[in-house]
Structure formats: structure tokens, C-alpha cells
Length: 231
Image 1: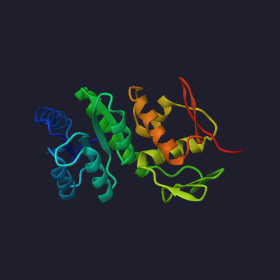
Image 2 (image 1 turned 45 degrees about the vertical axis):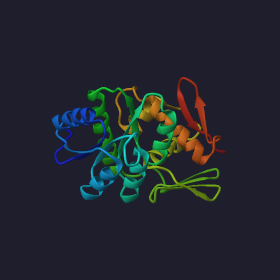
Image 3 (image 1 turned 180 degrees about the horizontal axis):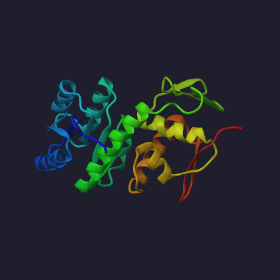
Image 4 (image 1 turned 120 degrees about the vertical axis):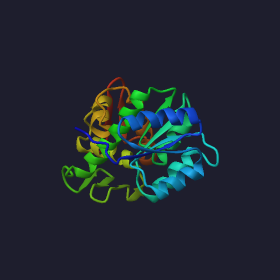
């Protein structure tokens, strides 16, 4: 059974009623929870007591959640669940680009938020513990993926990916040209047992295309994605 003992969550939200409700639910799940209400205090809290997971609102006083995410990730890789207003696609994509792992649109279910936090922690531990499948470096056409160093080059140029983008790319690269359903990617990369977050997969695919080239990943509508590389 999964344990949350001593797992620390930093909740960054300037609407106190929402922050308190999120904190109460996560404490009921067994997490240690700290609340920050603005950008500067969030960064300071993360530096003083490094969290295992950050639940981070985009709109904050001081500086916004995107800058908070950028600064926290510069200190140490930390799973981030970003909270956005419904329909803020630009903020979502920028948030994923600066290192957020997942997002939820307001209003959201507290039950689902808690499930997402648990899934992020499971994924971190699974990635850390799992032996790397296949050769240390995958070479597919002009794409080179160094699994040991978690570095990616295309046409000899290094491309900087977030941890989630890297894991997603590796999953696609292990079976090149094979279509992987969104649900399978969601289960294997994010550790989710249901398909409620398939848009999360789509958003990270957009990030990979922006960094690696739109030609690299093929969409099979209604099914999923395949990595397209030369034979």
C-alpha cells in the first residue's frame, strides 16, 4: 500500500478558501502541507522546505505561477501540478514548457486532485527505481536519446526537454512507428488508471513537437501517437 508519511506538498494559491480546501484534503490523505499565497513566498518556501510535489495556481500576486515553476525547477526537479482557469490554453502550454508535469482546470474535484498528486509521486518513484530498458542511448534517424544522462539531440543539436517530455519521448521511441494509445501513455508515463487526462498527453505532445519538430510525431486521430523516424 502506498504511504504518504513525510511526503510534503506545497500548495500555492492566493484564494485562501481554495488553498485551505486543497490543504485539508491533502492532509486527510496523510501529506504534510504548506501553503503559500504569492510568487515570492512560494519560491522561498520551496527553498526552505523542499516539497515532494507542488500544487501551483497560474495567477498569483508578486509574480505568476509560471515564474514560480521556472524558479523551483531551477533549484531541483520537482513534480508540479498546475491549476489553470478553464480555457487558458496559452498558460497551460507555457506551464508545461517550464516544467509542470500535469494540470487541472478550475473548478476541479478535490478527489481527483488528490489522485493526481498520488499519481505524480508514484511516477517519480517508478522512474527512479526502474532499470532503463534497452540500450543506454537510443538512435533513431537523426534523433539521439541518452537515457543515462536524460539528454536528447536532434540533428546534432541538444533539445532541452522537461522530465515528463523526456519520459514520454522514450516511451514513443521504444516502439518507433507503432501507434501508442493515449490511455496507454497516460498509464505508463503518468501512472493514471483512467482516461480522464488524455488532454494532458495531447498538451505534452505539442511541447515535444515544438522542441523537436512537427514531423517527428504522427497523430492517429481517435487513437494516439507514433514516433516517425527513418528506417
